[in-house]
Image (cartoon, rainbow, N blue to C red; front, side, top):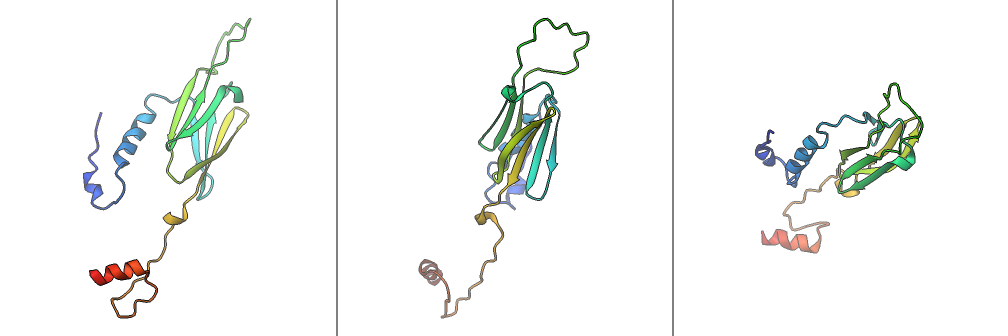
Length: 158
């Protein structure tokens, strides 16, 4: 197992204290699990879809949950049908759990199941506080136009 030293990156970034944990968990999420197969599709700049092949699973066998920026998709096995003898069994029906790490701005809108494909619809919602904004530059002139009282006091004490 390799460990990543991200220390050089921290001199250019502020507030990314948990990025090491995020990368570590991303590297460990999919270890050894390729079942069931899935696609992650970009629908638009703000919309995404996870399409997962879940042949043989019905809505009663699937559970989708989110917690702490983690999307978890679980499939439980159905009881075996009585009286069926398989000559070849190529459709896997085993239980599974898939985990996807979500960014803070990603919201799960819902899910649909059609023709054996589970589609999970995601939307990126950037909060107003995270959107780019222009910061006004003030001078230290006697006219401090538009500065709040507290900021005006702090500038004078500098």
